[in-house]
Length: 266
Image (cartoon, rainbow, N blue to C red; front, side, top):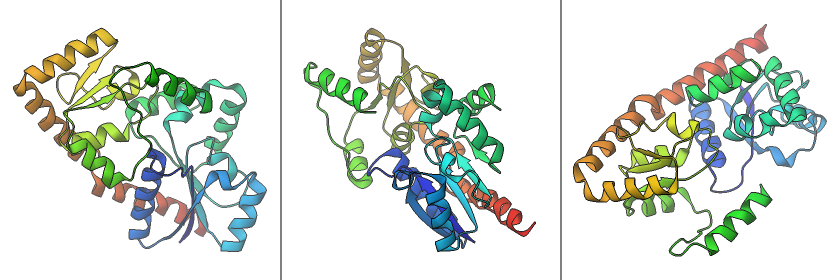
C-alpha cells in the first residue's frame, strides 16, 4: 500500500523522531510510506493534488490539528496519532477544537500514547512567545545553559554522561526524553503534571516534584541515596521494555494500517 504520512518535521524534535520511527515500522511491513512535513501544505486541496500525483491509497497524520485537518474530504482512508499539543493546547481553542472533532469523526483510527491522553481526548469529543520567555529565564538562571537541538545519537551520548534527566515541562503528552532516559538507565526527575505522571511513578520509575523546593529536596536525596537511584533506574528500564516496546509498537502500527488497507477494498 502507498501511504502518505503527515507530521511536523522540525529537525531533532520529538515529533520528527516519532514520525521517523513510525515510518520505519510501516515500511518494514512492506508499505511505501511517503513522509511529508504538514507545514509544506496550506490546504486540503494541495494535499488532494499531491495524493493524486503520487497515487496514494491511504494516509496517517501525527497531530490531530496540524496534520489531520489537511486530510479531511480527500477520499482516502486515514488514521491519526495524537500529539501533546493537540490535547494540552489546541483543544482549548474553540475553532481548533471544532476542527479536531470533525477530523476524529472521519479518521478510521486514533492512537494515544498514554491512558491520560486517551482520557483527555474522550472527555473533549469522543510557539515563539514561549521560546522568548524560556531564553530570558535561562539568562537569569546561574548554572543553566540552553543548548540547541541535536542529533539523537549525540543527545543519547550526552544523556548517558548525566547524573539525571530533569523534565520541568508544564505541558506534556508523552515525553520521549523521559522514555529515552529510562531506556538509557538514567534517573528521571519530572514535574508532577498528568503527562509526566502517566509514565513516571513516584519513587518507582522516577521522582515527581511539584515546585522548586521539592525538586531540590528530591535531587539531594537522589545524590545521597545510591539504593534509590539503582531501584528507579531498574524499574524505569523495565517499564519501557514492558509498555513501550519497539517491537510491539511496530506490530501495532502494522495492524492499524491493515484497517486502512481493508477500507480501500470495500
